[in-house]
Length: 91
Image (tube, rainbow, N blue to C red; front, side):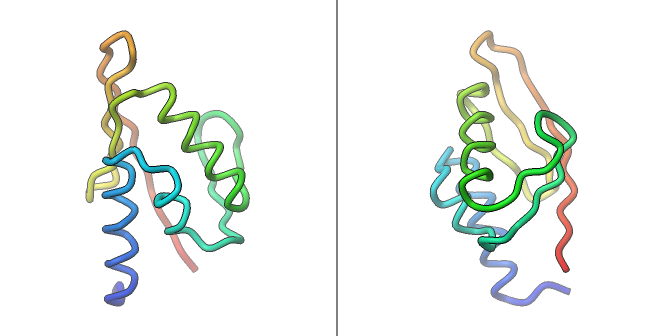
């Protein structure tokens, strides 16, 4: 079960992706976070790499946001609708 802090952090992450705010999005991760991603680089480690990863997504999808069901929804510059599925784990 998530703590109140976890729920607040997760909500801040979702809101930051919908606002396309890379700084706030990155601030929701620990500095030593390792993301495993299915596209692009297989592993993204640390705040600088996570920021770069999200900036690439935001540059590719001018409209983007992740919802509470862990689905990323966006529209590309060519008006193509995109849905990404994500699974988040913590330890």
